[in-house]
Length: 326
Image (cartoon, rainbow, N blue to C red; front, side, top):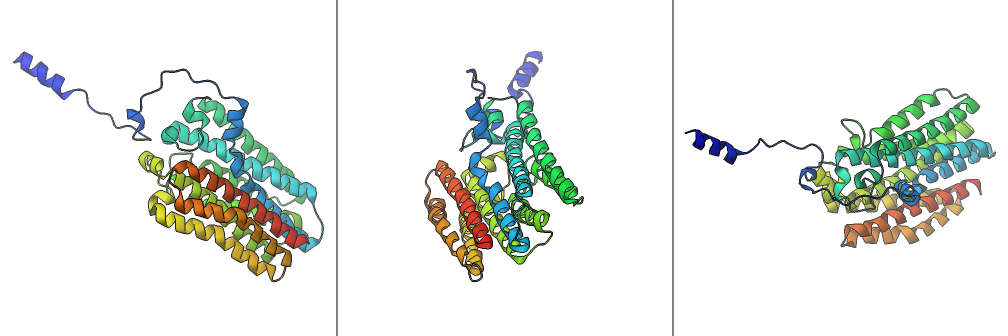
């Protein structure tokens, strides 16, 4: 009887433990080979330079709208607005690297490798770098606040940094609940553009609003391209992006609308500011991006679509700024 009982215990085996984060992570064998430390090139890559035009576009449009109102170029304030926006964008990118890496979401990543997931850098180090860029953004924002005496801007800056962190950070990141595009539209479209205009002109003309919507839509399109590339990996990891929730076809349709609607806005503005027609030249990058999204065969091809959409945003912002000040 004792032998039979012992044999049954062996057959049952140990109780299974449910893994957290990426459900595939528990089954992925750890590569025993040593991992080289991150180089300067790896750190630059982790900053995701392809996304930085999205931080520049709202500053261009917002500054152009401000000059339209006051007919003065406050270049120092505009420069600090740019520092705020770019630092926040880079901080978000490193924060995502850290948060997705420690969760295991990036273990089966299709795009460029992340520092945390690849173990090229310690998670704590990546976190410190993210916080450093958030601090730079906060200091630049504080300088703008002191210069303009718009003290309520401190609250706006704090909300921006909190939103940047909780995109993929915290216990319930909103980027994992299909809300990423909404927050990107609000913060990298409306808040960044209108905030830039306000601190230079203390006014919000309708041109700034139209430009803010265009910038926000293009920023959302970049995020859609990114999430479409990672749809299978995100679904396996339990990351419920908008793309995971609505599927590939609906994502392609929304991406196309988000890329083309800004040009409809520019065409309307061109009725009053003819130079805005030049923004249509950005379609030279936008249309190939749309074509790739609809015809790609390998997820990696969407990296090109992402980069083209980001460049579209920059060209669009530059054309609108020129139209407003021309």
